Image (cartoon, one colour):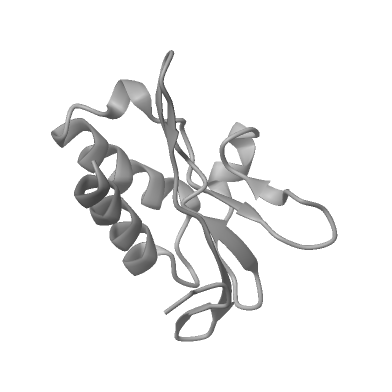
Length: 112
């Protein structure tokens, strides 16, 4: 499970760039979930904004309209916010916070 989730995380990391619509990333992640038989266990969406509130727009897991938002420089996003959930067992989740730059993402919570 950890290897599969890491694949999903790395795909989100690679695809989340300025000018990319969040739904484009979600569609790509869903293909990975489906390939591993996890589509029915995931929550749709993968990111939320970070700021003065715990979750701020875009909140792709709660507000479907936010999935159409285009990533822009200076956004602060937390992902992968979408856990893999198993009823009666719990969930698996990895979440880091990134600042979107002109050329990519800066991880501001990495323990590396």
